[in-house]
Amino acid sequence: MTVYNEAGRAFWIEGYGGRPYRLERQKHPEPIEIARFAVAVYGSTQPDKIAALMRGADDGLLSRFLWLWPEPIPFRLGRMRPGCKLGDRRPRQAPRA
Image (cartoon, rainbow, N blue to C red; front, side, top):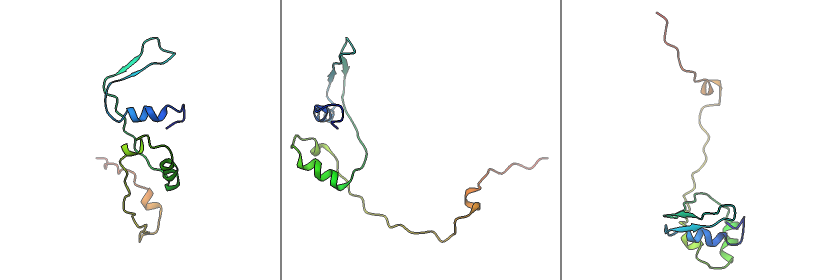
């Protein structure tokens, strides 16, 4: 979240509240006004990366995440062998009259 600059974390923290946000860029003469700045991020990461994030400064960013640890789903092989019949599901043509 700090790929472009170090102020990236502050940007994401600001996006949590859904309040108005003003974005000023050098390229644009007029500022961009966002009425309700809200951000939703969905994804996953490795435990080692989370541990590194938690060792950093406590600026409130991590407390805004909704952390989930789903139950693992066991992997099971099917009873049928893979074959061409499974992949060959062409639509059937209506018989000609």
